[in-house]
Image 1 (cartoon, one colour):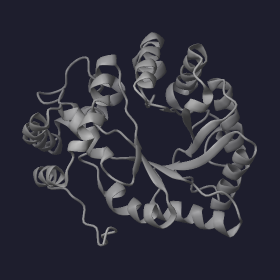
Image 2: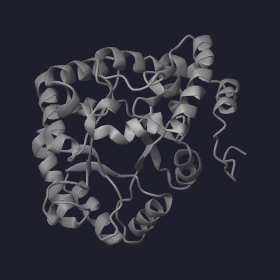
Image 3: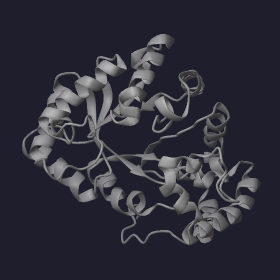
Length: 314
């Protein structure tokens, strides 16, 4: 379960607790946040709910991301200083002794790769994190981090957080498989419903209560009403019969489609209501129905399958 936009922003603390409870009781054990989400408030809410619920820490996988910490120059980026201080700040807000995975929330061209890998290795060795990963990094940058780690006997990244959905496929289906098969880096994907575009709610424009109607989401509104956005909505209408035949909703089909990829370790869901979350969690029941025939049928409708030179199964 992700906390971007929702925790500390779009939803109340009570709804956040309800969502986490539904997720946990449904078997979800991974909760993802970041120091930048709601300026740290998302971490505070997440941590306070975990404490209130009294869930065993060993039963949870908590992940956070570092890059945008504060306003000062020294409070952002992936310098050794900010990785160590930023993670300490996150742990205080979360009221936790450690996170399971700490992510570099984006690449940092101003910091040498060796410094980043050394700092991540340091926080792991200090018991502040179990593993580290990357987010929005290119395959080449991840490979460089892995090479630096191996060269100096340090700890390499284990996971990349990447955007992946029916309309965003290139990175997870072409670039990351090579890393998955060569060095075991998995993908934790986000935005399976493309910020709600795939939910079906934007089929007839932008409803007033939707995320795209918010002032800070003008970019999303523009994406939806653009020519490309209209084409995407038409393709979603063509996918509806496939979902109906499988006995599921369009969002459930979209999430199951993400899960069926062997390189995808986990799919982060973002929900603003209990009903949305329960619906999205129903994708687990759809997963066994995602046969090669169904996947090919979806590909034929979307017509956006990225070209990959290698077939790792042969």
